[in-house]
Length: 146
Image (tube, rainbow, N blue to C red):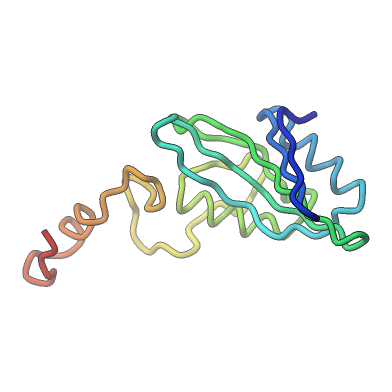
């Protein structure tokens, strides 16, 4: 199922291909990993990829699993985990808003934190916060940091 695996104490790390992301999640849920801790992403701009990951916990044995997969930055889409773990919906919503990654099957992908539209989601490495401040606020209201 995975394309990479390592263990550090009670934490397992799995690197899987995008087609196996949901397959592995279902396997874990069926095998006692009933608690989803988080879903998030890392922007690897140099590789033109996002690393999407989730962390699940199994009470028996106090085991953790971090599952990661790489997806392209251009049109980033991955299946939602919200059918398996309902709390995934809010984690995916946050990741969608801050990175621009779509989670297929998540019905709650709407703004959560941000009040204004961003051309580039603010957690992407190519987001220029200084440029955003210049556009969003007049020069008189903004202290210069340049």
